[in-house]
Structure formats: structure tokens, C-alpha cells
Image (cartoon, rainbow, N blue to C red; front, top):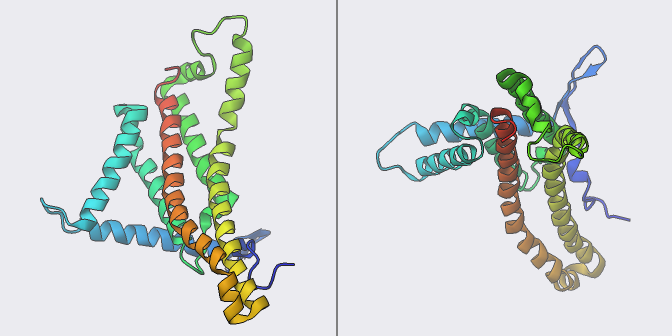
Length: 254
């Protein structure tokens, strides 16, 4: 049995901070919603402070903001071309929100919003519907070229078409699960190893538990920078896949 306070799953529990219902709909303000508000507020504060004093020789904060801008702009330009740059605000907002949410979740006693599938699925569905509606609006029936690839023998083309359609529809699932699973797994691992330290101290006392807990402590210490890297990588992968999907809408069949 897992000791009280050491349960690695308890950190993902959504708690109501202010109950609110409209008819049969529960729209209570939760710890997850609070962390989203904090995430957006910190992003807005960071961007305002880093760009309020524009100088020819940028300071550290302005440099980070400019590097972030160019990083996403180059990614989107490489994947979707110049026509895809109209989606830059959307892709940049996705990347920064996921990155800040992941990093804030690494702070003890903070809640990780991206550890819930409903959050990552909502973001993935936003990408899916924007790509689909824009692709149809811009290309009309030409958007169907995405499911009817050229250069494929006509005999197997219907089967390839079905596979392409299934792959397209399943995009939000893979897009959301990749982010959710990696973030949740990382936090579970950190909580498990940190919990070992607490359990060993409780079982063997302060001195014996401290000696026995050296290995799990070192594992926790080693995993922390790795999880910080994962926080960035997962935000990058989500944004990169978004750029690739937007390329399909801008240039279907290419």
C-alpha cells in the first residue's frame, strides 16, 4: 500500500476551488483552471516586460523573446512556407503556453495542466479543426488530394486512400496522447523516487533512511533536469506537428 502523501497519482487530482453550476453543467473553478490563468498571466507579463524597452542591443529578456519568435517563425516557414506564416500567432501561442505549463508543473506543489488528456486533446482538436476548415476554405475539393496521393498504383490507391483518411482522423488522438503521456509519466517517475526517500526515512529512521534513500534521491536529482528538457521537447514536438499539419492545409497533396 502506498503511504499517505506518497501516492504518485494524487498530484493529478483536480480540486474545486470555487463551485459554479449553470443548469446541469458544472463549470467550477479548479486548480487546473487556476494554473492556466497563472500560465497565461506569466506569459503576458514576460512578453510585456521583455518587449517594453526595445533597444538595438537587446538585453537578456529581449534576446530570449526574439529567439523564441525566430525559433517558431523558422519552424513554421520551413514546414508550411511563407503562406503558412499567417498562422504564426496561433503556433507561437501553442508553443509558449505548453512550454510554460510544463515548466510551472515542475515547481513543487504546482499543478501540471498538460498532465490531463482533456487539456491536450482540446489543444489538438483546435489544431485539427483549424487545419480542416482552412484547408477546405482555401482549396475546396483540392483539399481531398491529401487523401488521394499521386504516384500510387491505381490498384492499391483506394486502400491507401482509406489509410490516409484513418491517419488524418486519428491525428488529434496521437497529437494529444504524445504530450499527455510524456508529461504524466515524467511526473509519476519523479513522485515515485521522491516518495521512496520519504518511505525509507519512515521505515528506518532519519539516519538509516537517509543512508538508504541516497540512491532514490540521486535518481530524483538526475531526473529533474531531464524532465525540464522533456518540458521543452514536448512543446517543440507539439508545435512542429502543428506546423506539418498546417502545411497540409496550405499545400495539400505536396
